[in-house]
Amino acid sequence: MRKFSNEEIIAGIRAHDHTVLSHIYERNYKIIENLVLSNGGTKDEAADVFQESMIIVYNKIRENQLTLTAYFDTYLYGVCRLVWMALLRKKNSYVPAELVSERIMSDEDVQWNMIQNEKHQLVWHYFSKLTADCQKVIRLFFEGKSIREITEIMHYSSEQHTKNRRLRCKERLINIIMKDPRFKELATLTHELKSKLLEN
Image 1 (cartoon, helix red, strand yellow):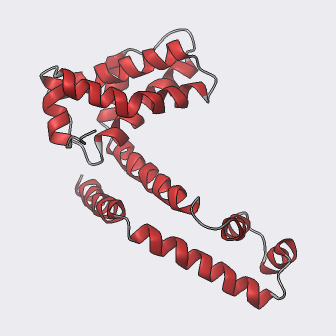
Image 2 (cartoon, rainbow, N blue to C red):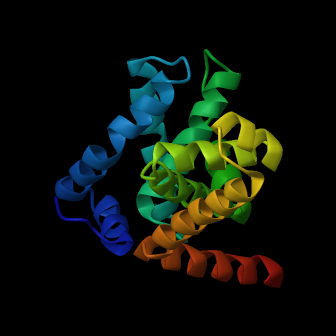
């Protein structure tokens, strides 16, 4: 499947282009459905969340008020997530689309959060590719375990070995993340958004 640029997607939504709309659905619907189902929702609610979110996005595009600072898929996921959160708070009735739209799109902090979310997804994607041993060492480290505790849990020969192992695992994770082209793009987006927020 060809990946459309943000500009092509925005133009396609504005023109009700079936090819672009199908592309958006195929790339995103299952992810949104999984988000809703994994948080106690139903397939019908997932469909409602997706439709409501697309209406919000369409209205912003129609009003020329949509500026993307992340991939469209990431942006849409953020909108869907907040619409779903609104539904959870008022389980039997949606917050009007206009109110959700204003709260989401007028706040650049939301765009910041979406970029950070994509960074986290990138980290966990590569974290899952580390050896089981490295994953466990890093998890224990972030859980606040001391070097002595990690040494005992992992049955390592010495605390120095534990320190060396932790360092090698962290370096391995950092190196493979930094080789991904998305890392550089996300770093650039973060810098640009920081500058924009400081100007306001």
